[in-house]
Length: 184
Image (tube, helix red, strand yellow):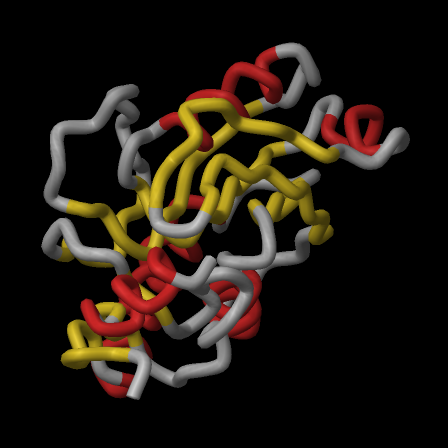
């Protein structure tokens, strides 16, 4: 089994996503030119469920950003943007959707990049916040829930591109971490 315990069940995820959608619908009810910008593969599961519950028109785009190697942050965030993406963001009210706020490096780097895109506004929506000292402090506009500082998998979050498909969020098994470190 790749996880040692379930931290956020499928039912809890459904409640968290529904609560976030209600708050976002209220905040965006009088806005137009809205665009959801989904960060990376990890946020896709969360974003799909969230976007289904939003009741205002918006475009959806994705931007790939990575800063992890295995279970550790590299300390450097790489943004793999499409050539045409920056132009699509100009003048938009952007809802930035991410799966997790831990170090803050990815969100900080994306927000800095968005500053140059001349968006009308940018709000952040993050499913999970790790209870850690963040390297980069960011005010999250819409936060799902907080979790302990453990490596997690499921609901889009992966370990070496595996276990994204789990319908809940679990703590990665220590045995699996040890095995992968011995046999990379």
